[in-house]
Length: 164
Image (cartoon, rainbow, N blue to C red; front, side, top):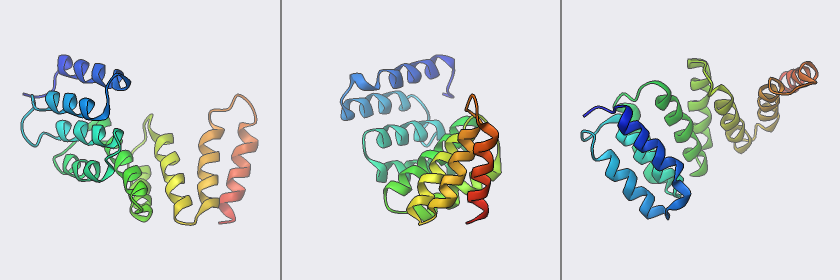
């Protein structure tokens, strides 16, 4: 069975109720829903990875994110998987790999997750000793959301970036 609108709504409802469950129970519910999909399905692997990540199991999540991406995860979930994989790698003490993934993702496409890519890249850059570059990236992204001072903040971020 491929995912369909009903399955997607059920998964979205489960994620909306995340705080209603303890970690193990939430993971069991996600696994129950994903079991409705074929073995090795990219979406099932991604959702299970995300659930593991959300309950504090980044090692398990990393393996599943990699499997989901290898299985051909598509559209917005693919980009979310890269962001989440990079975040988990950073949390596991592998910020260099996180930086590499997020730099590639930043160059790959543009969508509503651009600022999330930048935010997680900034965190990984700090962990690799590149705090000025991280600040420049974060401030540049932030400058696009401010009601005022956009140009000033963008210029200051550019100066920081040029001093790296």
